[in-house]
Amino acid sequence: MTEGAPALFVALEQSGFAASIRQSTWLYPAANIGHIVSLTFFAGAIAVMDVRLLGGLAATAPARLLARARSFALAALAGMAMTGAVLFSAEASHLAVNRAFQLKAVLVAAGLANIAIYEFWARRAVERLQPGAPMPPGAKIAGACSLGIWVAVAACGRSIAYF
Image (tube, rainbow, N blue to C red; front, side, top):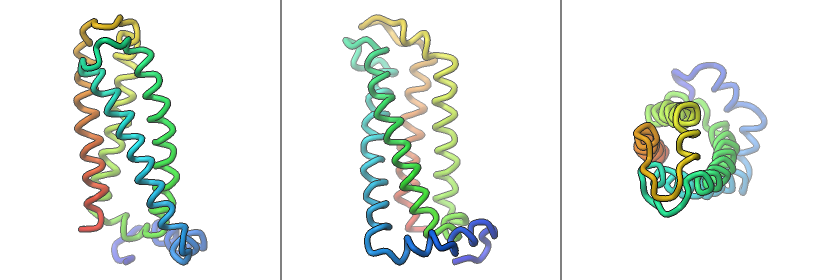
């Protein structure tokens, strides 16, 4: 489906790389499974971080918990990016015009922006907190936004097939 898709995405989909993905018995399914496994690890790590930012798991010092969860989240995000690139290239012209995929891309950007905002404006204050200390309002806002954004990203990802 190349109608209305920008030429760049049509060219990507028609590339030898994308053709080999579509023609392989195992490559596309492996990328799809890898994407789901990475999503699972990412969702778990993000959920732990967001629950802590919202004030849960208060008996644990936030710095250590958030650092460990962040490591898992970054590794899982890298896995999702790699497998997502494989999946995208196989169907680039369709996905480029798919409304659910477009919304997913915008939401991913919003999620990454939320992380950047937290890192610059709330992280230092949170990492200095002792167990049981209340979270700063900025951290709570970042945690709530993160939960909502990443759930919406997952919902959009699942909705791509229907648009």
